[in-house]
Length: 523
Ligand SMILES: NC(=O)c1ncn([C@@H]2O[C@H](COP(=O)(O)O)[C@@H](O)[C@H]2O)c1NC=O
Image: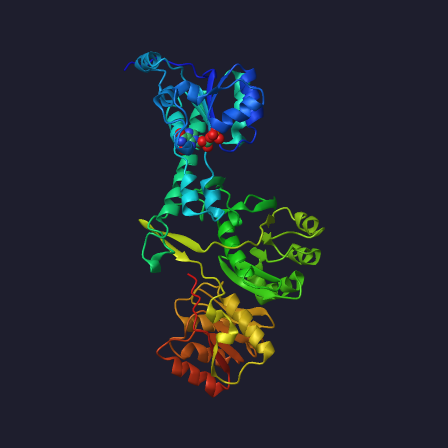
């Protein structure tokens, strides 16, 4: 095999066009035709072009074979694939192509059957299988492999670049390489979707939530200035078509940093656990204030009041549009990020007057069912800890000590229980009137978390507050700190071998204690 040089730009003379998504097809076909490109095309793609008055050669004319098996075999033929795969730098390939009487393709335009959309539509397994494209990926991969000789276009989004290349006399090698990379990413994502769908339901019934193959593909959304620390590089990746924080719209402010993303994700987790207007203020992935209120301005005032010192430089999430009143309050405090489903008229004007604040618009959407965490050499996959487990409904709680809570106390306990889920373990959260007043987070023993929560609340705010613990108290020492501080009710999962001691301590203090039976560790 001897290799000859090839010009950087390869003129586009012959194109194979086979697309499921016909968006922009006629306009593209016209542009190709006007530039003198011969069009070769499959079934309904050829019909669409012909109906627009464009001359088109059908693949069947090229191969001498009719499309068969309901379209399962259209382009799978040497007279289609040899002209895609012939490396024209090689004399032997050029000679073999000539011997076949075949002309090379300079361009392949193909997009694939909509497999993911078909699965999402609730189609039957047979219908989903039928939408697994075979011929398309073969052409796409062939053209991408042979990018020194062929350009591959896989999305209508790339048509403007193709039209521009026609005017330039073809794509450059650099462009063809970039198109090939996009094409392989496209078929890789396609195959991951197919493999994931196939492997779900193959395990035992009790393992069904965890497919035997777990695949995911992400697209780089942005390269960040640095990672958790300045000496670490970092980038943000987004699931294709994914919503959530990675797809949030930034309306104002400096570029988001790695730590901004981590804190904003924690803030969203904290603020979206509540039905009422809620605000969470996060520092270092932990809340320094969470509150609900009659409106977001009230919720923000009360969340801020929990720990005004720590709220400096915080990340604020809110589960309703930001009002002008809330915006004015936020503008008073140095804040890194605000994330909200929207901003009411005038609220943006107030906030954008602050040069450095980052403002994100992120719809409050359904969070995914599973979450991943990398460990060395692998990955942990778990179902997301939503606060809608059976034990999160107060009607299922067991009264273990003291009097049944009155309505207001129960409402505070429910709030504290939900808010506690957003605090890193060991988590103790004191709350009053729908607002956290003292949070003990991330300690390596629960007694220190109790101490910290009480200390943060201060004597006055701790007295008469309610307390929530994300997991059971292993000893009575932690709750004793809460009882000594004067809390009026405690909610915790229960389940310790020493529950009786903890319950007895609450009973002795005349304090209400509920057991939820559900734990909300957050590490
Ligand atoms: N079977 C084949 O040989 C084949 N060749 C191309 N396709 C796909 O058929 C679609 C285009 O078909 P039509 O032009 O008939 O609408 C494209 O999405 C293309 O990826 C095929 N279909 C499925 O594998």
